[in-house]
Amino acid sequence: EVQLVESGGGLVKPGGSLRLSCAVSGFTFSSCGMNWVRQAPGKGLEWVSYISSGSSYIYYADSVKGRFTISRDNAKNSLYLQMNSLRAEDTAVYYCAREDFGGNSFDYWGQGTLVTVSS
Amino acid sequence: AIQMTQSPSSLSASVGDRVTITCRASQGIRNDLGWYQQKPGKAPKLLISATSSLQSGVPSRFSGSGSGTDFTLTINSLQPEDFATYYCLEEYNYPRTFGQGTKVEIK
Image (tube, rainbow over all chains, first blue to last red; front, side, top):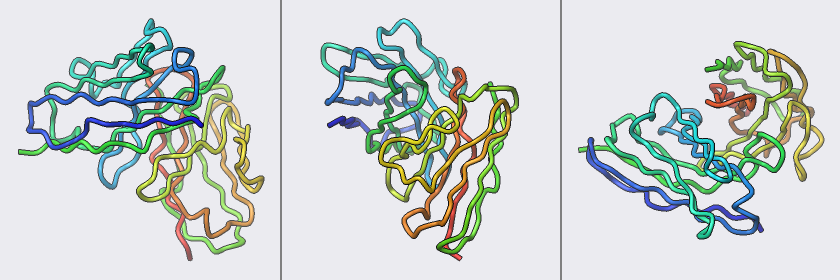
């Protein structure tokens, strides 16, 4: 069974940092591209970042470029999102999502972890 | 970045109705579009990939069509469990862009 489990969310002050993790199981992690997607309270979905299976390709949304860093450890079946210089507008539920084999869709998602940026 | 315009933003429908949701891309994206369903407090769920490929386990009342810039999600004979918010996602390149979402509510 494919599982993605996010952790690391919480309350942080503006300007602070937080590191999210996504632990995966049930598939060959090293073969899949991975994404972070977020959803602010009461708002729609916003794609945040992508990392290819071997970390060769990395992309960010303009809204987080220069502040967030995506990474992965294929040996640990884990995906990460280092978030620095956090702003109130970064408050959201953060989901990790798998890119499907041979395609471009996000076929499996975690349950999400809430990040709240507030003083 | 490609812009995705999804409409309507919300709609009210009855059980048994046929519902249509559209997404328009700001440039051609071939058939690289997916549709996702999200229920309150839950993660999104992939319904349809590559414009019209129904995911395993998704009821056949869901269908997708389109190509290039204009895409449609159709739900035939709406069921109580279909009341949710639906998003399109362009899967053509990065950065990815979601549509604004369509909330399907009970009339």
